Image (cartoon, rainbow, N blue to C red; front, side):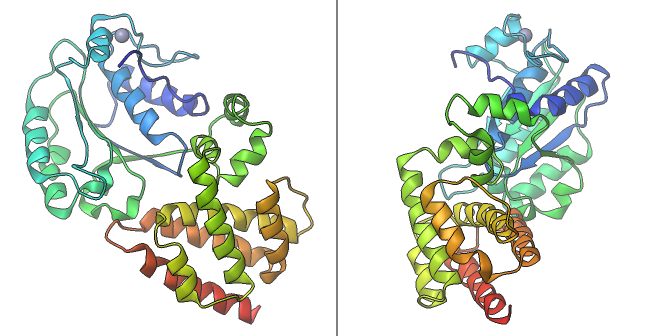
Length: 329
Ligand SMILES: [Zn+2]
């Protein structure tokens, strides 16, 4: 690591309130960090871990968090801090191994060394299966002094309720829209438009500039148009998306619902030409309130979609329902 991870500028209020809690010794010992795609969960979790390890952290301002100068920060930079442990899933589709969690639990019981906190980061806590989650419970119930567990979670519904109920849930949101715009202006000409098209996450908006994203978007635009204009069967449309992550589909469809609702209500919007065309062709298929309802449902599905669901099954059910709604409206 050549430098510490800065706190995403649009999350600074949340960051400051956590730093205050830490300085007043009232930080919860298990923090579950969640939020929409591309809001900055991973960066925020890493920032938080580094901030808690630092012995001279700033509690507010632009440089809230780790100082980058103290002995603890230097050890973090050298990936040699003995009070920090990160656990990741074993592979793209594999979960977190129960052995890794057992090891983590006994490690967390040790006393913190030089820093004020002993910090464990589960960078993709959705990879926790029931058994791994169960072995975590004891730590969550009887935490060691100054141990903090940070769980980074994209689909909160996929976590066991026993774990959820023992954590403090923090849903990241854009605290400061101007800051998000300023950051995005380095990449795009129209930050607000890019944010809306990406479903609200600044990092997601930047990912949309990627070539592979354009391919994904084109596949999804075709599926969207076919779905709402009744071209082809639901099964065929879901098949056409079989190589995509269901999360990409749900996030983009949710963003397009908002555009369609606004557009059908006569609100002008700027979108890239391909998206604008698809929205114009389909905006009258549902009433504005139905678009918003569908938007909610897509987000909810994204929150609860468990890794064990297959994309096809999730999408086919969703698409059948949409077709019924279009027919009856
Ligand atoms: Zn420091």
